[in-house]
Amino acid sequence: MSAPTTERSDAVSESRTSGRSWLTGPVGAGIAAALLFLVLWQVAGVVGDRIPGPGPVLDAAMKEIERGEFFYNFAISMQRFVIAMLISIVVGIAIGLAIGSSRRFDDLFGDVNLVGLAIPAVIWALLCAMWFGFADTAPIVTVIFSAVPFIVVNVAAGARSVPPALLDMSQSYDVPRSRRLRHAVLPAVTGYVVAGIRFGVMSGWNGLLLSEWFGSADGVGHRARYWYDANQLPGFVAWIAFFILFMVVTDRVLLERLSRRAFRWRDGESAPGEPAAAAAA
Image (cartoon, rainbow, N blue to C red; front, side):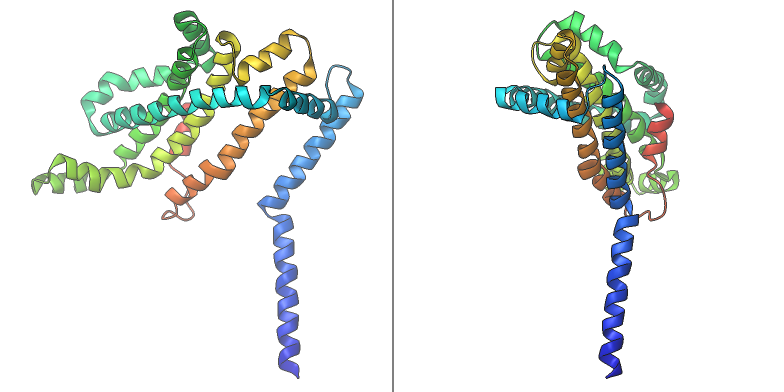
């Protein structure tokens, strides 16, 4: 009779432990932070007459959805963003591998990439608006200029992390350059590529909003600018909140999981691309 009783008590204890870990873990902390933010937002909306609370903002967002503006502008922005990020990933990986693997390329383009890191996205947005006008080209080029330097700096750091002894040995055995790249360099830089893409996505998404704000007739940034010029804060805040929410969800649901998967073989260590990108930013 004692064995079933012990098993039930163990099961109850495990259930309570898992419940406490869920409440005190990252999910519980995230929910608590979100609730605290909503409470503070509501208080700010009641106290201040120039800060719209969650209610008016949600109402403005629902009206944008009913008008069809939400899905239309979001689809346009996503199309531009996906095209620009695909180009940025290809270009960033190629340049990063060249800089990290070749001293000559590092001397030629290393400082240029640092200059790209130092230029804020708003400068690229203004320049591209003047260069390309109100068309799809300006937002796409802005995203590329904003994202590529972050991808390059991380991929270059990954290429430099490849043990020189391994490359020297492969050269001594006359291993073709393509095989060295495929079997020695690329596996070592995979995690750095994911980290670079993660920071590139965040920087590029900011660049997209700014470019559409200054030089576009549609898109998420343009719609936020529309309500800003109309001095309608609920509509403006609704689009900004959506912009921030989309970036956070994309990072947490997709990019962070990809980063953890890329560095699953380095348990207990931080992603090497993250410190590099953070320091560069």
